[in-house]
Length: 63
Image (cartoon, rainbow, N blue to C red; front, side):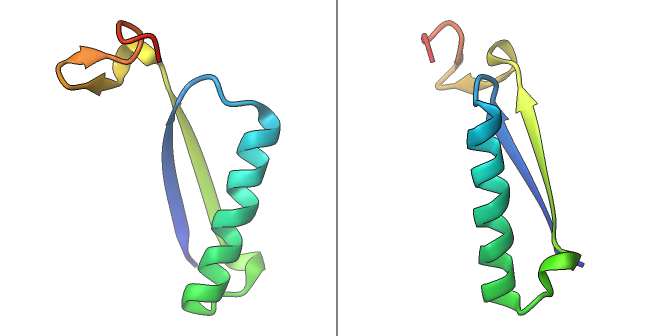
């Protein structure tokens, strides 16, 4: 059973997350031949204060 774990900076809409789940699922079906029903995708929203870029938080960088 393929399991994809994806970390995103918070702020994506439910529609965007749905699209990620659909596209990642399809990519795994095509890449490894797994049945769609066996693919699992987990999206973890990370607070902007917990995401570092070049020594600063994403929040401090205005992202």
